[in-house]
Length: 199
Image 1: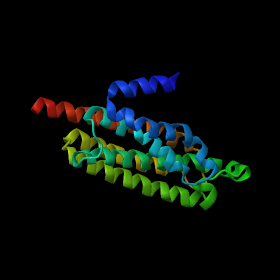
Image 2 (image 1 turned 90 degrees about the vertical axis):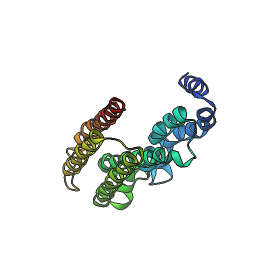
Image 3 (image 1 turned 30 degrees about the vertical axis):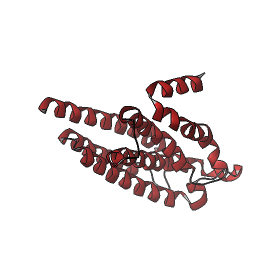
Image 4 (image 1 turned 180 degrees about the horizontal axis):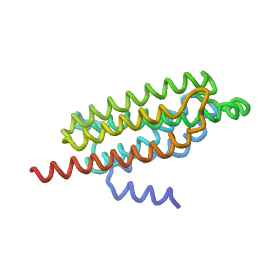
């Protein structure tokens, strides 16, 4: 039933969302199986979630392949590595289970320390892509203030977990990232509101 609702919504949003729907459906249905054959599953999950802002952009703009659509690709990349990065943190607590069950993940393959370092790199790239996207669309100071707060929250998230202490993984994974998402939304809305008021 939810698949039918998704198809009807894509059809109502226009020809491009409907055209892109089969590819999105493949990722939505298939990403949960990827731990059985690739340790890159964290980034498949991130990419799958990142299709949401790309789909929204396609619905509003009716395009994703023009030069003006570059911000959408920046968002696709930012969400992919943001979610991939915090999924790496979450997966650190499953190393023993993944190895016992033959499931593939970066922490199980390369170790918790390596996974946490890669997570940090992912979140630095996330910030860089969000900076780039904000500059491309000319968002105002509320967005940049929001990104400053997000930078601090990401630093805090990484301070909560260490290779020899994963006791606060759930706080890092659920709580901090929930605050990050709300902060980003509020900062974008405030920047757009300010821009509309000025114009």
